[in-house]
Length: 409
Image (cartoon, rainbow, N blue to C red; front, side):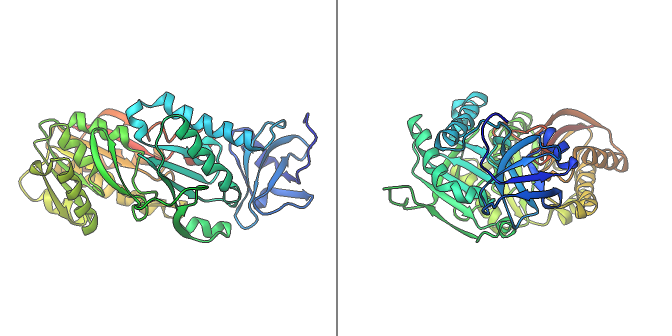
């Protein structure tokens, strides 16, 4: 270490050291061997190996199993406003580099650890920013970060009407943080009149409610996967399962599908999808059904064939390793049924958004489902989340979305 260090020191196990050297930014509580100095909850601490090697500096979280979240491995970094401005600018410049200008209207600007902002998510929905703060360290500095981010975007010609905090999530409980949602006060500015905003993705308009919508308001990670579905859907009859806001169904309809049926167990989701279809003038080639997909697919299998393209975009069936086996059974059931439902030569889009359903297990499940259904899969594409949700190698949690396109033969 070249610079004089003034932060409390957390000495960690060889296991933690190895994980950090592989690129993972977390230190768990049981991996802390010794502490020197007094640290504040959410404050900065240095992490050292047993031999005194500097491994990085990060935020302390006294209540979480993840005791330290690293921000930097550079011993010369100074964690002042210039440091944070530089990191925010890097995150925005990355999106401008990897995405087309029109795709910046709605995109993820900060993706937690993948952007070295552990516990922070920021989504841009046209002129609103929707934010989740999931670590006590980020909670302490959000008053610096969020106005700075708005300033950076505005200086680059982006109109920012306001910032909404969606901190109504149970993960905050593990950090000892209260749950709430509401407008973030930008200095000298009034709160926007409405949390509703219209966005355009792949040429389709959606009304997003950042106050009440899922997660931060709308799922942005399938942007380019939806575009692939649109390309394949021309002249097809499409069944979109777990449609939610109707995004895959709408892309298929806009892509030239003869007809699209959008299904979700939630009546409110179906109504939202129907409204989005009307907003885009696509309702004439679409119908909507409130039904449990697990019940619907076996029923459709007994009826004359209607669909030659099935889309499976279920919610995460597992959010922990303890329930992975049950989740894989659920994934297999819907994929098996979809393969049975499709005619030879039909098309299947299938995915999982849980990082606990690891790619190897997901692929094994698909092979088993195809075997049991008596079909063979011809892979068209294997895809992941969109590039505004970057995958940071060494941090498996950032690699979560599996998306496959097949022809069933």
